[in-house]
Length: 22
Image (cartoon, rainbow, N blue to C red; front, side, top):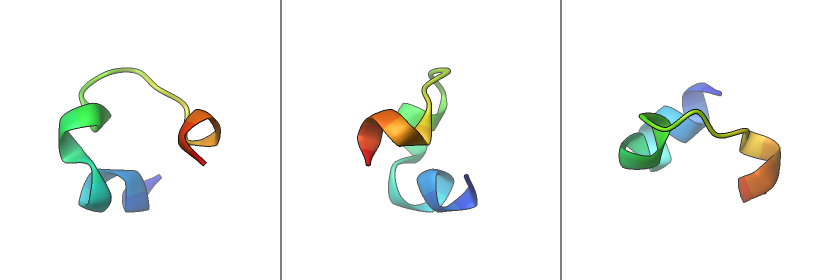
């Protein structure tokens, strides 16, 4: 999940699952 923070910190604020993005 740390990858999500680095790549899209803006979206990280919203409770979203990394599976939805990838």
